[in-house]
Image (cartoon, rainbow, N blue to C red; front, side, top):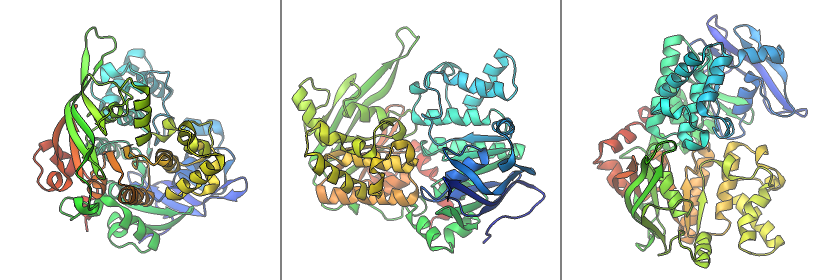
Length: 543
């Protein structure tokens, strides 16, 4: 195993004894590492370990009072810690590209996506409207966006979460940078699209000698896609080594805990996890979806429609978990929105305890909203940034008139405990929390009313493996204790193998395969399902 930085004439980036402080308090402790030209290095660690702070320091984008208080960051000999803001702006985009984690906070919602990519191309020296548009469409296609020419003129809200992330990747590639920093670039993507995007990034590295600094909580993905893994905890590097060394022979207890918590390597087909994970579940259906259909009219096309959901049927038995998997645009989130009453079905029905949130009966709809609660994919968009964490979590209690101010405050504390957040965060705002912490707040909010059905739309995709393990354990404990039922929408089949009893595989709005997890994983019938299973990262390191 290797620790610290290495000196090499082929080194592109050399971080030396880096210390970052906020208000005089250090949050990074003598971080040192090198990145060679053409090398792919991953930084892994749980939320708050310092991964994103390292990236912010390299890019000169530390928030608030953050500053580099010690050390150096050498890019081809230029110390990025000791240059002006103007000089740094000339480097960002052209020499260092960034694929950020959250698309909704990094895309202008009032600006067409094509124009945003075109801006990045223009700022990197490309001239001529026709040439800029042509290259922007090419970048969108390379990033895996279908029908790129038409979608060039659409706004971010017209894209799924995965599609928005692909737009960010296209923007990052616009300047053909020497160093590409990818901060959780595929956390919102299904495994097949994830593989497509990462294959493209790997082609870029191989063809142009681009270096890749890959920040991720997915150890299987880091092992598959990088040459070296740096493990961080509490603002310092605790271990560095090759993927095989880190996954198969970790030297530090913290690294061993990360490996043990990662589902992808140990929960592949045949690993032995079955529907008996939650024994004794009642066979009574709590959610019934029958012949569900949804059509959307295409803007600007007279009479044009797209059938996003096409004759979908399945049931969720009380006390069990059913997972819906499929690539971006498969219709899985639209199904969830119809069940929640946020979209109106074009045909068929979705019933919770025999009732539908599409009903016009206000009392019946209010009663159903009490027993079914969502956890959305994007914590940035689902949490009001002006509210305190306490107000966000206790809002459902106030809306339904549950308890008094003192009991609600006590309930908020209990919920923060359940999702592994300190109670001291109660008076903070969402922008003061990490992405993983914000998602845990969203889960605590959904649990406030102790619902019967929880609809989780990529509820753990933004979490590091240790917190993901805590949340999945929490969901399992609640299911055993309260008889909760879950509809779990995810692109992570390893998580499905761990938590679900049944699985529904969707593609292009249709169900292509459904059954128990054991049936679908071990006796796969559909070619598309085989493709999904084959794309699970970390298979080469399965123990």
